[in-house]
Length: 359
Image (cartoon, rainbow, N blue to C red; front, side):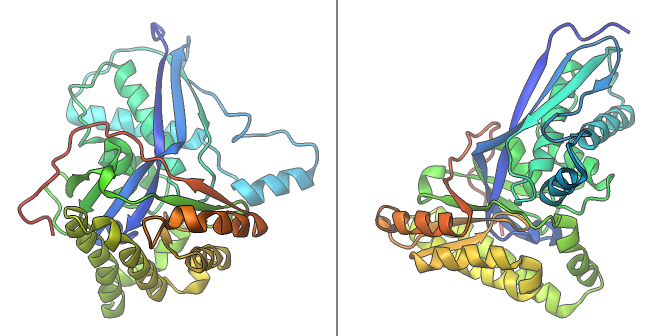
């Protein structure tokens, strides 16, 4: 087989949920943003064989001592990115075979790098998967056969094939970029929800508090029990998840009007508390609860960005981030958290901004 003629590189940003998270996996609704501060980048380069190259930072196999190995495993887990890249290649081939998309016989090497904090709920895994899929699509010149609307479901199939419990939210906003409202109450025949663009200019200044010492819990561990109960028709779980989703539905309505920025703190507060009642403090985690408490002590409201280890926040007053930010910064440093001003990534593909009845 001939090698790929020229290298191809794609970068995918992290994702932070603002409202409704994690009801996307339960026929709910969410609002999320692309986080330009962090990204995963994958490169397909010419090679005589198909090679998946490990990252020295994220797939280490050599350590100075077993204590160093244990420290790495505690902070980053035992799975790096190689398994995600391999699974993406497998699902890409399967998808193209099923869709009758012919692939040219080429060989290449896949390598990756990422600065997305591990196990902080910022969708580092799906960013790697999507970056890999984009490289594969461009390297094989099959852009006409796989559209942007196909990518979220294809990326989700990659992770579910590895036993990762997840929803479409991360993959949708990482595919389309910007700020997106997603309603999954009624899926199309192809498994798509209603995806609507929100003008980031309607949002107040946003920040992230990130735990510098993640607990090591995966989203699958957090959601598995709730998913089982939801599928079984548990009324309390169904009602609780509806309450979480309603925050995003109300947020969509507010952010189309002038009150959007002013309404967001209360909606983030409600979204977090509804999720807390549903999952319990143990699942959310002591340090994540501490982040929310710090935010509230400085006139801000926070919601989980993902499954734990990071919260997204905004201040209650428009000038609050100027007045209260220094105190929050100092409190975060004392608790060994990182405070980051969130930069929303650019929109990558066109989405409608209005719908007759999105909810």
